Every structure is written in C-alpha cells, then in structure tokens.
Image (cartoon, rainbow, N blue to C red; front, top):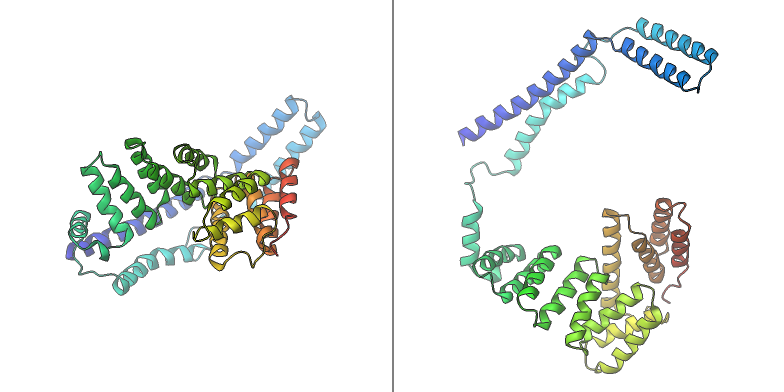
Length: 359
C-alpha cells in the first residue's frame, strides 16, 4: 500500500511539473522570438502572389503593402506581456494543476477502498463459474459462457446460450456474432436462424432492415408458416414503404393465428397501423411501450450516426403516428438542416411529417 501512494504521488507530481514546464517554455519562446516579422513577410508574399496571378493591380499591390507596413508598426509598438502567475488566465491554470491531484486524492479516500486487495479477472471468473448461476448478473454469466465456448468450440448450443446472455447484458452486437457462429456450425437448425434474425432487429433498435429481412426469409424458406418470421417480414415491408403488401401479409397471418395465441394482439395492432386505422384503444399499453421503445432506439442510433436519410424519414413518420408533435418537429428541423438543398429527401421528410396520427 505504501508503494501505491509513492507511485501515485510521483505520477501526480510529474504530471503537474510537465504541465508547468510546457507552459513556461511556450511563454519563454513567445518572449524570445517576436513572430511579427514572420507574419509580415508571409502577408507580403501572399500579396505578391495575388498580384502575379493578375488578381491585384499594381496600385492595389502598393496599397496592400502600405497597409501591411502600418500593421507591423502597430504590432511592434504593443507591449509584450511577461509570463507571470498574475497574468490573466494563468493563475487559474496554476490553481488547477495544484487542485487536480488534491481533489483526486480526496475523492479516492472518500469513495475508494485503499485497503482492498487486488481482484484479478481470472479468480473472479473462476468464482463465477463455480458458483450458483442464479446469483450471477447477465454480464457475469456471459463471461462464464465465453470461456465454456472456447473450451467447446464446436458446440452450437453453447453459442446459443452465450447469445442469450449477451442480449440480457445489453450487448446485442456480441449476441449477433455468437449466433452467426452457431448458424455456421448448425445451418439446419431453424431456431438458430430465427434467434439470429431477432438479435439483428434488437441490435438495430427494433427496425427490420435488409440484413434481418434476409435472415427471416431463410427462416420462412425452412418453415413457411413461422409466425414470428412472417410478422417481421411484414414489418420490414411497412418500414420500406410497401404498406399495401405489409397489410396483405398481416391479414393472411391474422387468419392463421389462433384466437388463443398471445401474439394475435400484436398482429392486429400492426395491421391497424399498416391500414391507417390504428387507434390508441386498439394498441395495448404493453404494445405501445414496445413501439415507443423502438422509436427511442431509432432516435438514439440517429444521434450517434446521423448520416441516414431513410432513418430520419422513419423517425419523423413514427413521431407523427404516435402523435408526438414536439419530437416530430424537432426531428424534422434537425433532418432539414442536415439535408438542406437535397430536394428529394426534404420532400420525403415533409410527407412523413404529414402522416396522420393514431386516433
């Protein structure tokens, strides 16, 4: 522990000293070498270059030379400020250099555990693996399963379980990677294809993009009556603007889903939305929460990667359908500013903003 404090103190002192040294050195360089003549010569060279290219006449060249000379004389007469602690803006720098290590030390003493022994990752992983899985967090279960998968590289079931744990620990990209490996090992398993497609939708914030649609198509090739794949295929068509095809697919799906199937309500709500007949009463609180969650996921993705005109159109349309006019207008303004001058995108945004809300 004593060694820790010694090392921490040396590092803090070195960082503070380096900051002060660089600041003093920079200030000394400014005092030692007046940059005004250099700037003056550069400005004259630029003036001569413009004149040589015919962009300035001889009279304008002489006038520009004279103006540059006047600025040089004015700058030369200005007093040079010496680097002192009292100079404007430098005292806060010195105070910050001194306060940062002290603040860090205070926070560590208040919130840290100086006497706590090191906890290497390997012993913790061994403890998780030897303990009760019911007591572990999803991220800890995923860590255990990653080790198990390494020990059993040809087991698609281990990868399936790993994907479920990665999804539960809010790591959808890792879940998709695990399921892709599982599908490569056992391409005959339709359940793995279905899980992969759902994981891709989850990763993409609830949107059914072409990548997910392609995997769902593979599921339907194997099991044409798969309810989940048919539902998401219709959602993908609706997101692409093919509302009539989406509604037709959903009507056919609704005819095949038994009244006792708990998924029937989601199909009915999606059909009402595709036909433009959705009402607040026709959508349950759970379904409405799920829809809002998908829209929020889309908004977060656009905030991180805003260069997606189709995504902005979908976001504006979704806010319009939900009747959230403030969010719709904010998203519309942001998209219009980003794609100013691109008439086709602006027209799509305007149409999306005019979408009728659910009643």
